[in-house]
Image (cartoon, rainbow, N blue to C red):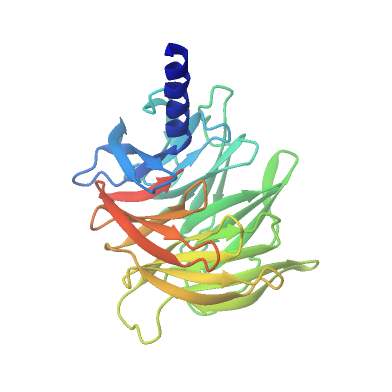
Amino acid sequence: MKLFLYFLTLLFCFNTYAQTSPLYIGTYTREHSKGIYKLNFNTETGALSDLKLAIPIDNPSFLVYSPDRKHLYSTNGSESGYVSSYKIKEDGSLQLLTRVSSMGKGPCHISIREDGKTVAVSNYAGGTIALYPVNKDGSLAEASQVFNHNIKEREAHAHSALFFDDELFVADLGRNALYQYILKDDAYTLKDDAIIKTKGNPGPRHFKLTKDGKFIYLINEYGASITSIKRTKKGFKQIDEDSTLEPGFTEFNKCADIHISKDERFVYGSNRGENTIAVFERNSKNGKLNKVQSMPVHGDWPRNFTIDPTGKFLLVANMKTENIAVFSIDKNTGTLAYLHDFKVPEPVCLLF
């Protein structure tokens, strides 16, 4: 009987653990926040619980895991600009390893190569992108390369950068361009002036690539639109442009974040102003999008959002109302249904 109860308890603990995923929250430490926070997320019910301060630190506005999930990296958007590396301890709290210069003002985005050897940081105010080698202990070395996008005619605002195989793509809101760098002889070099030519002042902000790298979806902060891009034998070409807003909406709006569903059938984008998540169905053959829903975020200023590891839930960080809203995802239509929200101080980035 005792043995049976032991195994029953063990099974219960295993199931509970399997249903729980840690969620780290990057914040602005302007008023209520103290640093990076951690929540537990139930992947069966969508419930959030057990809010804890993982580490006190200044303005950790964007976060990324190492591939083995033993370390975490953040931008620190202070006046000078820093990048921090952390060891994830057994209890989920964070231990600061290194803190190095971001090589530009206003670091706003951070990403890591698939092999975990290089980290890229985008500096919005400085208009630069800095690359950092990752040491064996998970800490960061000083920047090995810095790309300055500023030109005499125009000020750059590097807003995000993503690795794909031996490529590095950079969205520059100030220059209204998406750039491609190629890795050769252990260094990245700019391949072209811009992979597509944008019209007007759309303000490219964040973007995502499909798993095969054949399509890129770029959300435009000022243009309130998503630009769909296809890779061809000759390079890249724009194939579509879709508004993220409802017809007739004319008030102030700035787009923020973009994500592709786990099965790559749907694309989601956030509207700050309209305060919605725009839901698009994606044609897997030609890559074009068709809008199917505008879901209110049950908060104000949805800066960043994420899809949970199961692909069943979408979580939104509403910065001004200081809450995380949780939505279920219909696996057939991609549409969202609001479930509940959870109060968190000044959330701007969500990391599963």
